Image (cartoon, rainbow, N blue to C red; front, side, top):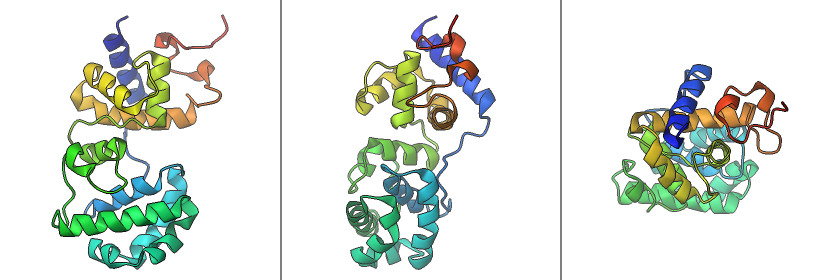
Length: 213
């Protein structure tokens, strides 16, 4: 089985297991900047905790303009449970100001432009491009890197290099949803410390499978 054949098989199997490929972060589709902020808060924090914090943040500051005008200290107080709160609050404030002043309140639709925003890397930018603008995207988070390494679809821990490798083998129309499914699969089955190979639907195509014979 070639690497591309293994990728296609994994895509199909995960599609059957998780037919609804959705981001686990909550946001209002009409306010796409909320997703951008949520992803920034999710760095080294669980999505579940972020989903508890963002309703409070967005209720107090219900518009992009309100967030851009807010004092950083006010944002800090709300996002503190997400950890690294001073850096995250500073980035949120600066990003909202830049979106307002440079982009007219509209999220850019390319990775290149999105990564000009404070604190926004390629992972977040790809998520926005894929989820908001429905363009092909490869979101290389820890789940994606770990599982594609185990599957032999990538061979490095470097997110940029993994992204480049996956672009070569994933069908563009499947790439974004595949990455979402890897998140769900990584949390439930292919865990970092102890993958549950015994109940894994990818066991027959995974070169890292550890099921005893």
